[in-house]
Each structure stands twice: as structure tokens, then as C-alpha cells.
Image 1: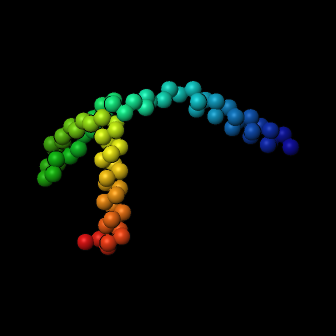
Image 2: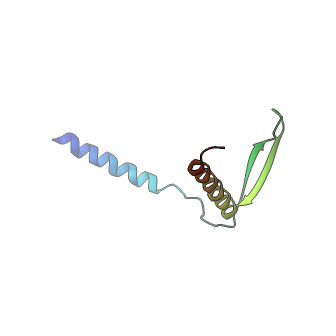
Image 3: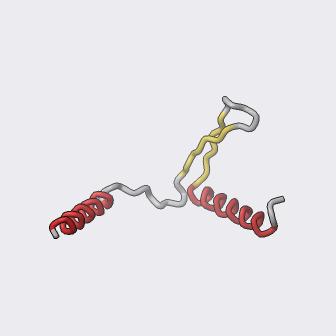
Length: 75
């Protein structure tokens, strides 16, 4: 009987600790830079910078292309 009470108390404490973490700002104009490998090279890398909204748009378009390929059969 005491075990469920302790378990609930532990879970409630972990939720409070998770809420204390600072979140990244949701500013769509903040710049995000990522590194990508250059095709044909194991050494060279390229730094690509876009705003958060541009990265989201690129991800959405990539997902749409993937869905189209799945519908039409991978060609």
C-alpha cells in the first residue's frame, strides 16, 4: 500500500524538475547553423545557416516529397 504512494510522489517530483529546465525560444527568426558533409569527401564539411522557420519549411517540403515517393512507388 505504501509503494504506490511513493511511486506517485516520485513521478510528481520528476515532472516538477522537468518544468524547471529553460526552453529554447520559439523565435522563428533565430538563426540555426548545421554542419553537413560535402559529397565525395570524408573530410570537408560545410556550415549551413537558416532561420528556424526556414528549417521548418525545408523539413516540411522534404516530408512532402517522401510522401509523394511512397504514393507513386519509389522510382
